[in-house]
Length: 333
Ligand code: PMV
Image 1 (cartoon, protein in one colour):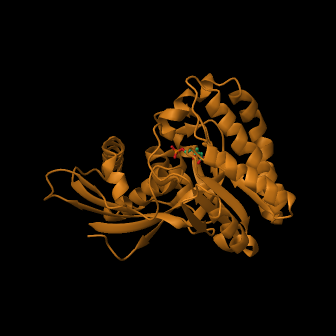
Image 2 (spheres, protein in one colour):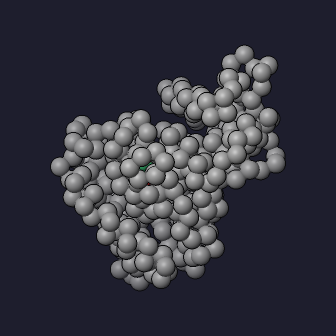
């Protein structure tokens, strides 16, 4: 009754911001992402009749435990997710959960995505539930929207759907399809003040939301074509367009939400300079100040070096496209 899963974080090329159903976490738009090889969560779950209550232990870096409000909130979400899984099995056994991140939590690298994907896959295995990849993706989505994209392999599309059964992610291409990199320039590693779940509740108050949503189908088609043709320039154009539009929506919500800092803007300007100089690189940014630099494998070294030389960049995390969530045999306890 014990199982361990590992799940990658993912970086969205077309972002998700805003829901049409908050409880079911149905997004306002479909999105496309790439799983990250070097930013992942490992989670061990054990269910037992002998456990009097659920216990959750976040064994990641120590900075996480200092922010108890984040820990408490995530604990409640983990227990709600365990309840969902228990209901499917028809059991009331309590669980022990130990979870560990390979990267700083809460800083715009989607820890909730890898976290809920790993929790879903580990809990399903520990309960011996027979569920398909699609069902795991739906379950993960109920824990955290973007987590549904961390279940399938490689380059992934989340179909928005119009019900819980039709809103799930599937693989577009396996990780080996295109040797891309996501080089994360970390400028801040403490948890953000406003998380994406509460932040996106106000998306509808932005006058720019409708314009962004109207542009999404065209952008999805452009990303699919760029992936098919492995066209880094076409991919870069559409990724930056959608990222900047999402941040325009965030910044024009009421109350406004600004995740970008001076360091973020400095990196954006540097990327534009490098590109004028002939380097094929683009940026994208989630709900935090860290910047994801997307490029091809052949440019990894030169871009990592340039990024690490920018003042304010504390750490560089280099990711290749990765497999989705999977069971591993080594447990955390
Ligand atoms: O599902 P959440 O709460 O992790 O929301 C993710 C939102 C963004 O990271 C900003 C965009 C995205 O699609 O990943």
